[in-house]
Length: 567
Ligand code: HEM
Image 1 (tube, protein in one colour):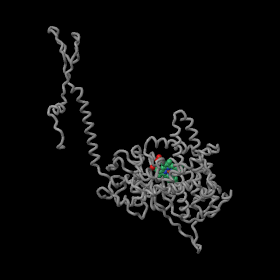
Image 2 (cartoon, rainbow, N blue to C red; image 1 turned 60 degrees about the vertical axis):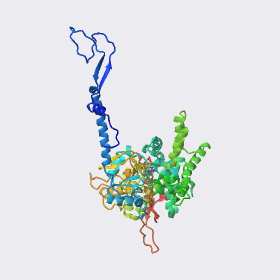
Image 3 (cartoon, rainbow, N blue to C red; image 1 turned 30 degrees about the horizontal axis):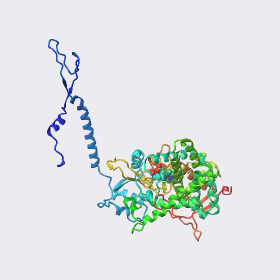
């Protein structure tokens, strides 16, 4: 017991222990022969003098209540003590105060998800580290991720504070980085209505037109295929969101989205900059030695502002001129005018719609590019897979590209899509989540307020789930060989994030990727580049680090095989 505890008066202590407090209740004058239940009826031969007061023993009333309160209190105390006696997940041993800053900030020769996968082999599939008091828990297995982020998503749907991206680079309007609150919910609802599966047929025409155009561009200047694919993804989003038609060359909004994405990609993984762990650093002047992050944030932040404001200004101007094409933004603006005109929420809703529009361009364009490039790289590196896919399309639909309605008749193409998402996931560490309250997993304490990182790459390369040689592109993993054979988990919910924060644009993205895949397979054979001796050159399979991961530049020959190119 604490030696400074105040002494408890012994009488009080005794009465608490015995719970025998007596209460004297004065009784007002009552008529004769009116008895309370506590009084014994006295034979009438004795004269009866009613008492001036009665004593009620409160223990009969209060005892059960006090016992209940004390038991609950004790149970809670025990539970809290037990929690604090639970161990934290294992992890690299840190130094006092600075924690694991050396390990986390060490110069890496490999991407962060590979480093985490290596650590998981040493410490286990759930490990933790701390940097300057900021705790991170990394989940590296399917079981841990589904148990925590999916099944307990009420506790894991928050986002950590990100001083670099949110405060310095002003990405506070990005739904993907918002804290888990009503403001986020309002954005998510607005977004969901336009990107849920039943809303998607509305975008089929835009997706098909843009994909046909992509094939024509690839036929005329195949060497620029990286840029054509970038324009294709950005063009679809810009048209769906702002009703904007891409310029044939050097489109300013594509350039803006690229510039803004560079910063987000570098800073988006929590802890990429030390200021994420020591928020007070954000107040350091940019001229200070070692404060180069402030200069970077200023440059990147200006792109963030422009990305939010410039396409929106275009939309508002086209609306004023009566030239706006119906799209996500115009339809939403019309809708909120009808529903909110009288409640005075217009400006708030306009901000929500503007934020949702800009985030689509940020979150939607670059990610889809990465998946399409991965598919092309796989087709170049694994020509047998490509030949089999082309055979399937020829047999099922002939020489024309398939339509969305024919998707279920093409199981091998579906398996290629799954394998593309698995082989090199676009966002290998997804976006960090944050635990709200303390939780227990597998006997370990996950403290509330921890940054929780899901290593999607580790799960998608887990041989116990996806079979041997997970670095190899092998769509057969997703095809059952015998009836009743158990297939591996679909990579879709892992590649697109978790729980209540799962990517709301995934259905649109999957449609775009599927369409490009089928058009490419119908229109071209994607082949290895030839060297000066006419020998095939193996493509380099390497990916960039960061929030989203892209194949590093590789070469591909697009050999035409269809009349659709010139349609
Ligand atoms: C291959 C394409 C894509 C991939 C791999 C992808 C992946 C992801 C991931 C991993 C997250 C974070 C989930 C989490 O926190 O657990 C996310 C969030 C998000 N994505 Fe996507 N995405 C893709 C395409 C798109 C598209 C096309 C759009 C919009 C049209 C979009 C809009 C969003 C939004 C708004 C969020 C934030 C959700 C929230 O925090 O509530 N994404 N995406």
